[in-house]
Length: 160
Image (cartoon, rainbow, N blue to C red):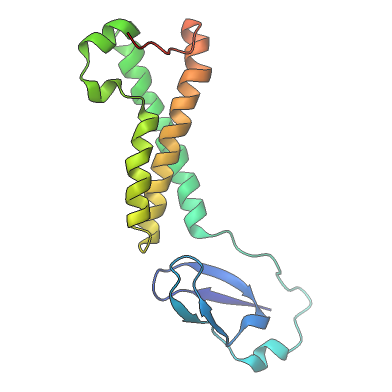
C-alpha cells in the first residue's frame, strides 16, 4: 500500500512507499521540513495483493512538458508568420525589423530560466516558466534545422 503525500508548503505530490509513513524529512521540491502521513504501525501492516508500486509522475514535470509543447507550437507559428507571412526575405527582415524581433527566440529562454529559479518556491509558476523556456529552445532548433532547410534550402543563419 502506498502513502499519498502532498507538501503543505509548495503543493508537490508523490505516492511514497508505505515504509516512509510517519517519518519526517525534506520535500524534494522546496526543501521544507515535512512529515509523511501515517504511522510506523501502517508500515508494518501486510500489503494488499494488487499494490500499486509505481510512483506517480511529478505534476511539475507534466506541466513543464505540456507548457513546453504549447510554447513550441505557438512560437513557431508566430515565427513562420513573421518570416514568411510578411513576404520579407531574411536580409530585408533584419534590416527593417526592430532588434527585439531579430534575436533568436532561443535566447529568451535565459531570462525565463532565471525567473524560474527565483520563483522556485512557487512550483506551478516555476514549471510554466521552465516549460516556456524549453519551448523557445525547441522552437528555434525546429525552425533552423527542420523548417528552414525544407522551406528555403538552408538553416537561415543570416546575420548581415
